[in-house]
Image (cartoon, rainbow, N blue to C red; front, side, top):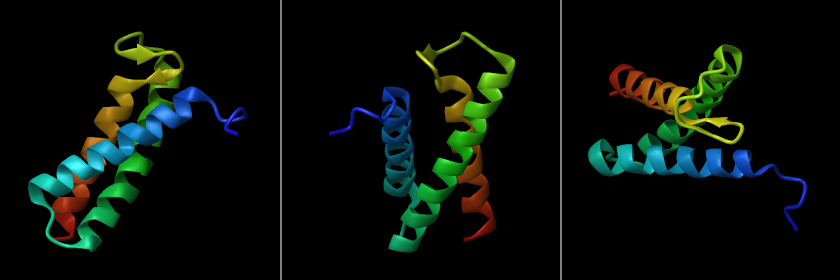
Length: 86
């Protein structure tokens, strides 16, 4: 069924959803907050993954997934969005 989907992609999606859910549990009030957190998490995670691919850092890499850089990107963008849109 999901034979064409890379495992790193599925794992990255799980981390994005988890990060957005944690932020929403901590500071979310409305469904709009959750949706913004999800969007920013996906964008930041993707940006961080690209940075990780460019610098080839072996820290916290799970296969092709550069978890450290991608997680930092996701959290940074979610927190910036939280500060900009009260």
